[in-house]
Length: 327
Image (cartoon, rainbow, N blue to C red; front, side, top):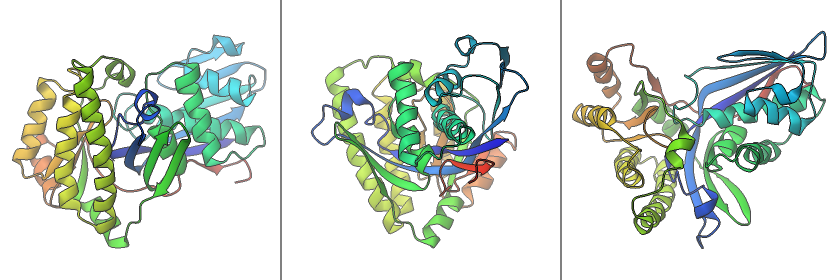
């Protein structure tokens, strides 16, 4: 049996500038500052006794041919790696399924590729995993998404990631041990209880294309500020920057927010947060919130213990094979 473990990601600033339509035409390209979170997607892969394919996720499939697999990420990852029959694949996660704003779909793709390559007796590099995941999601399946999720999932850690026609550049963000601990204490993910299709939100046109371009340029510059603040440990200033990033994002598409999300944001800020932003494409998923360590207790008291609050711990390993595969 092969088991891969792949982190999801939390993007501080820069989301949206990793989309090819922006990154490939802007002179400075796109840039994102993000952290791979210590919440994971697990993929298990085991040979079957016959040539059929069994896939277990929120649904369960047993089919005789690759083209009959309905899970598009599984089907195309199998096709790309050449493992096309006689396998049983299961995906499970530490977080809710799609639509959380944590890039979980790309984590699934990266984890699938890692497990399938290991099953075939190959060890894939992190660059290879990210590039192949981008190819499947963007080129093959046509998802209107960017490239940050795949690289964050594959590499892990805290990174400044640049995107442009010359490729993708990963630059690790230097974090002191104290900053790593403080990030975990002061940054909290708050679940909205809403999920949405990132592709659907990202596919919607901006009301004003010139305004959208100006906002994306501002968001890219915020990614550089976020990196500087992380490296210097200025986390309260970074929290305030989240507000600016959220306001810019809200102006890009009318579907990014709604009445429920706006009400939760106002409540979070009213409890003393220094900043908050909705992660991912918007319209649901998790808020990333910064505040004093005591804020988490106030959030629990106000929202109830079932709301789903997660401290922001960091995964420095990226996608790894944790069982089997000789790794």
